[in-house]
Amino acid sequence: MSSFHRTLVGIRVTPTPPPRSAEAAPPQAPRANAEGAAKGSVAAASVPRHHLRSIRRNTMPGGFAAIGDTTLSMKAIELDEPAIDEPLTPMQRLARAEREVRASLEGDP
Image (cartoon, rainbow, N blue to C red; front, side, top):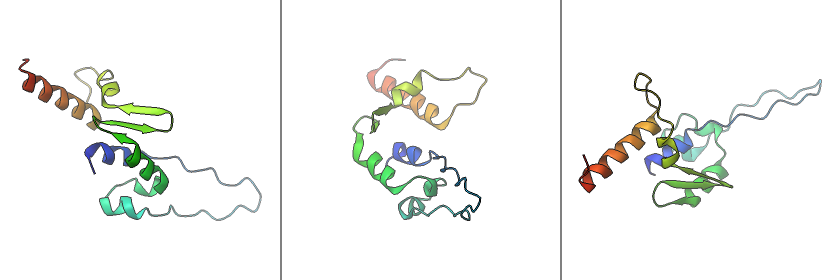
């Protein structure tokens, strides 16, 4: 599983709100996702298994992942880099490293 997959697995999904009836059901613990737990993902229990399958199945070469009608790309993250004094997110650091490697391979300074 690539680092791009692991990053998507780390996305938290907000739980559904509890029922509004007076006799509300007791809160349920999040179901453990064996696939994510085996990989050591912190938020794996909050991502439904069918989402993980969809992400894996729809991942295309070049770092793109199609989820429903949305296509996520590393290129979109490059545009959102913060000012120099702000820390970069792991995805932004990955995008920057990718650009630097490509530039060094192409011979650009």
